[in-house]
Every structure is written in structure tokens, then in C-alpha cells.
Length: 593
Image 1 (tube, rainbow, N blue to C red):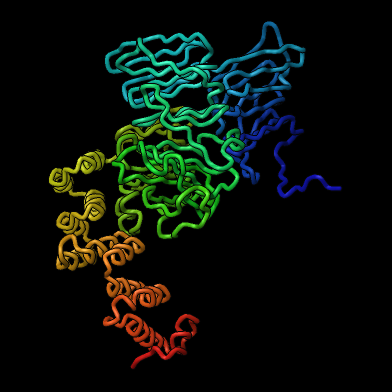
Image 2 (cartoon, rainbow, N blue to C red):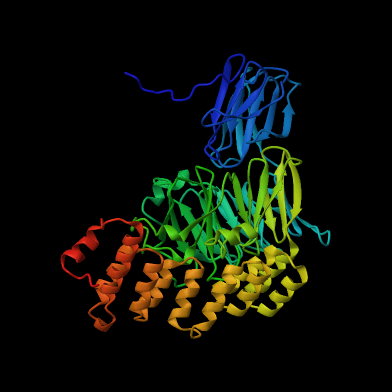
């Protein structure tokens, strides 16, 4: 009987392989061998990192179950590394000698590690000096029960002491959230001495802070709180309790008004919970299905409630984006495939993504470069707008394995080999997004005229078109040299303002065919709906609309019009009819010359 199959085999070390560890966070493998090196591989055996030769053989390696840490053990030495290979610190044991470390075991919360040595000694370690920076605040864990919070702007420093061991903490939006073994402590930067304490949260694994709420993933469930300590949402979906141990930072994302969770039993499916109080999707999430399995998800953290987007990277490392407000399906139990027009591909070969903290600007890291999408949401339906508003820059000077540490305001902070590398985005585009969020159209126009940059004009054009600001859209598209769109906008201006026809044509310009058709049908514009389907060469849909609404307006002869257009189309192709739906109409004698 064969219990195992071996689809991948590779030579990892020159000597014996003495230790292995598989990361549940990153799905990568670490190995240590007699050749004095430890190495990191992906799941298919491709080499990601090879260490320099140590003094002795690598006898043990262990990935942290909750954080991006790798602990390496050798003779009389422990080394704490990042999961990409670079080293945080090392500890040598010379007096007394402890020998080689053969067994390493992290605690369930990922904060402590037990190490067994060749001389029979058991050594317990605790990770300290973890540091988080957000704008003017810097939080550093100085001990098992202490965190130092420093305000860089005014130089003040507070030492926060806790009655229990600190397991996890997060910093952002002027708040520090600290999880101990049985409590949550919420600090406001303006009221450091009066924290809000929540009891009963055990083994907190993930904390993510947002603009309005923060999310906690612990051993019992997922919790969304306000910064006043009030429980806002306890999301649940089919199979959620069984999937809790499999959730991690890459499979759950907190946005401005939405919480996105990847289904681990069907990893191409996303559950989206609405965080707006009283919303219908708050307890019955809607579903978003991708074509491939999802590797990482990110919900936008800013914008208005009507402009919320979800970006995700699939296992092919391709980047997609979708608007969370226009997702089909009524609940998570409805697993029907969504309309393909609602998900747009905007990038390839991505390893990590992150949204800006205050604007809908997206940054993503490739193998040897990084890209900034200045208008990924509103422009996603138009490849031309995406091309105009996307900037790709080389990261050769950064090194390999670049990660995104933070994206605060207009500053992206990358991390490579332990070094923090801040990079500024286009400040004009940052200010433009903030202006558009407040609806200051004339101010936005002045910014674009001042900077005179194509990406700014294209961003303004996409947002203005979405908000039905046709005059601004025309000027912006003209400045971006999009002559075809200028001509189309001039046609739109000839239609009656705010009419169903104009609204439908505007939706069509944004790439929303289904929305345009719905507007026309809702306003009983059946002739225009049929004409729209014919323009899009959606022959089956055109005939379906005509057959359904022919009786309501018989004088329009909708069916005869569709069949005449179909005959002209077939004549141009020099082909006979092959569609069964049209063949049945011909058989019934509905064709008119």
C-alpha cells in the first residue's frame, strides 16, 4: 500500500537534511542541513533563500505559526529570522554550553518558543522589541508585559504596563490596540492614561485596525469593535467555526465599511460583510467568486460608502479588483457564479498589495519592481484609464524579497533585509483623491491644471464620469488625449439631462453593461434596451428582451427588428443561421422582409 505520492523531489543540501518546517502563513518550506546552511523553498521546490555558511550544522528550524518569523537552531546558537531569510537577531550560549538545538516548538499564540538542546536543557524564549510605526506614533514591545509608546512629533514617551503577557498589538489611525492573554486594551493617542478594556478575548491571533473599526481574530471567533469598545459585528458564515484555525492575515481584510473573508473550504470564494449599521448584508454576507484560488485579499481603507473596492491576488499571481457594492448574489449560501464584468484584471505577477490609509490608491510588489495604481477602482473597467494611471518603478536598488510594511498617507514604506525604505507617491494625486472624496470638483480641476500630469487628468476623468459630472469629464479626457471618449461625452450631452437614456449611456461608458440595460428596462425603454443589446452583439439577450416585452408595446415590432438585424449580420458573414433560438423564430414565420 502506498500512503504517499511524491510529485516534487529536489536536492536541497550537500549533506543530510537534518530539519524541516512548513509555514502555514506563507506556504513555504525551510530546511537545515549538515552543509551548515538553512534554506527556504516554495511549495514547488524553487529556491527562495540560501543562508551563508554557519560554524556548525543546522539542527533545527521552526516557522512561527502566527507571525512571519523563522527560528534556526545550531550548536550553542539560536537565530531569529524573517520568513524570507534575513536575520533579526541571534543568541549564543557559551557559558554554560548547551550543545546543539534539536527541537524547537512555538506556543500557539506565536509569542514564546521552547527549545530542547543536546545536553538535556530546556530553554524558553520570548520575542521582544517588536516595533510598529504609524504617522507620529511608534510602539515597541520592551518586555513580556510592557510596551513603549512614543510620539515622534513632540518627543513624549509613555511606558504601558499590563497585568498579563502581551500576545499581539496593532497601531494605526491614532489608536493602539493591545491583546493580552485574556483582555483587549484600546488606547487613544490623546488619552493614553485611560484605556478601554475588553475582557474575555483569548489567544488573539490577528488584530487589524481601520478608520472606523478594528477587527480581532481569536480562538473563538472573529470580532469587529468600535474604538469605544462596543461590539459592532460578530460575522459568521457556513463553516466559519471549523475554518477559524486556517484563517490568517492574508485571508481576512478589514476595509472602511466592509469585512472580507476568504472561504478556506473553497478558496476562490469571498464573503463580504457590510459594516454600515442596519445594512442587509451585515449578518447575511454576499459572495464574490474568483476564477482561481485566492492567495491574498485587501479591502480599500478609505473613500466614500459608495466607492468601496476589494482587490485580490490569485494563485497565478494576477491582480483583480471588484466593487463591493455591485456584487451579485443575495447571500453566502447563493454560490452562483457572478457576472464576469464585475471583476477586472489590472495587474500580473504580484506578490503583495496594500491600499493607502486615506485614499483609494493601491500599491503592489512584483519580483523586480513595484506598481502604483492611482485610480484602480473607478478606472478598472477601462484598460486605457488603468494604463494612464499606473506607474511601475524598478526595485533593483532595494534588493530581493521586497515587502510592503505600510502605506500611510502619501508614503509607502517597503521592507527589505530588515531595512525600511520609504518612497513618496505623487503628492498631487494624493491631494486630488482627498479633494474628490469631499466633492470639491472645481478645486480638483485647479489641481489638475496646476500639475498638468496625464495620470491626474485620467483619475479626474474616471471619477467625474462615475459621478455624472460630464462637463468635467470632457475637459479631463481632452487633457488626457482620449479623443474617442470626448466624442462620446459630446454625444451624451445631446441627450436629455438625467434621462434614462443618458444614465444608461454613462453606465455603458464605465463598462457596466448590465447596469445600463437594467436602467433602460426599469424605465420601460424597451426599444433602447434592444438596441443596446444589438450594439453589443448580444444576440440572445436582444431576442429575449424583445420576446418578453413585445406584448407591452406591439407597435414597436421589437422581434421583427431583432430578426432583421440578425439577417443583415448573417449576410455580412455569408453564413446560415445556427442559433436554435433564432431557428425557432424562423420556423414560426416571424421573419419579415
